[in-house]
Image 1 (cartoon, rainbow, N blue to C red):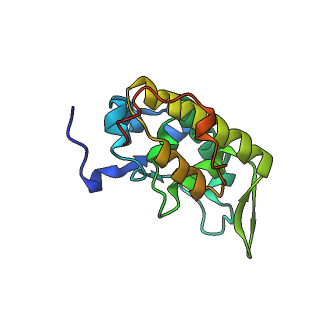
Image 2: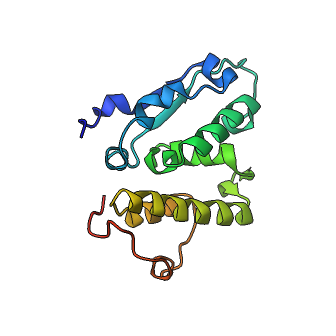
Image 3: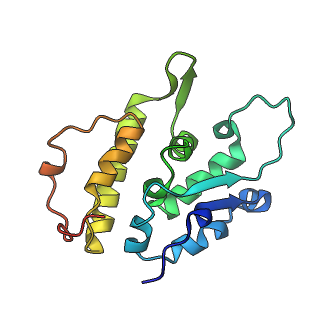
Length: 172
């Protein structure tokens, strides 16, 4: 098992050309890691989009079509990405805003369309629970925390309705 990267290495710069070409090569070092190595970095990965914008461009990053398209491709090919993204500084929420319809209010901040969030997060929980279980790992606590950061209230019996993961004793 490779040594996890140092904290400074948890920042991935996405160059303009990668965004334009839908090139995921900036994520390649992460794509080559084992599930255990990826899960060891839960909540630490940060993405920095190098996208030139005029000073008077009022759009949020999630409103820029090229960034949304790159994020959709990254999400499709690296479904574990949401589990790794930093939760404290907003990387997770920013990434999910690239994927789902949302609005912004001064009082409530970013608000995802409830039905979209329900479907997407439930799908993601199923997918990542099975992905970790196939590797003999258990990450349900991290998945529950990820859902909570996104404002998704997980029913207390949610995990009980699913088969136990294969790596039940290997919580990461």
